[in-house]
Length: 121
Ligand SMILES: [Zn+2]
Image (tube, rainbow, N blue to C red; front, side, top):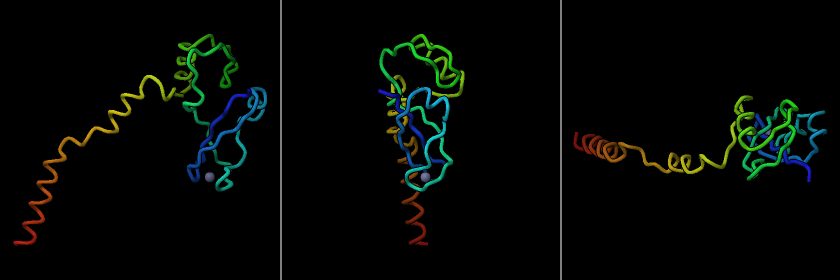
C-alpha cells in the first residue's frame, strides 16, 4: 500500500489525502490542486494517519536518509521542523483544550455588575 500524504490548502484550509509511492513523492512533492477551491497553494501535513506504532525502518521523504526506528523518526521530524501529532501529547492537548478559563467566574460576576450598573445608572 502506498503511503498516504496529507495536504492542507493554504487558501481555504481544506485537508485532503493523496496516495503515491515514495518515488512519485520524491519526484513531485506537491499535491494536485486543492479539491475544494482549485488552489495549488498547498502544504504537506504530518498527520496522525501518517504515524504508525512500532514503525518499520523507512527512507525519509524529507532527505532520503534511512530512518531506523521510532526515536530516530521523531528526531528526524524535529530536526526538519515537523512534529509528530496524535500520540504522546494527545492527553496534554485535551487537557489544554478542555481547561476552563481561570477567571471565568470572576469575569461573569464583573459582567453582571456592569449590566446592573448600566441599568440602574
Ligand atoms: Zn482550497
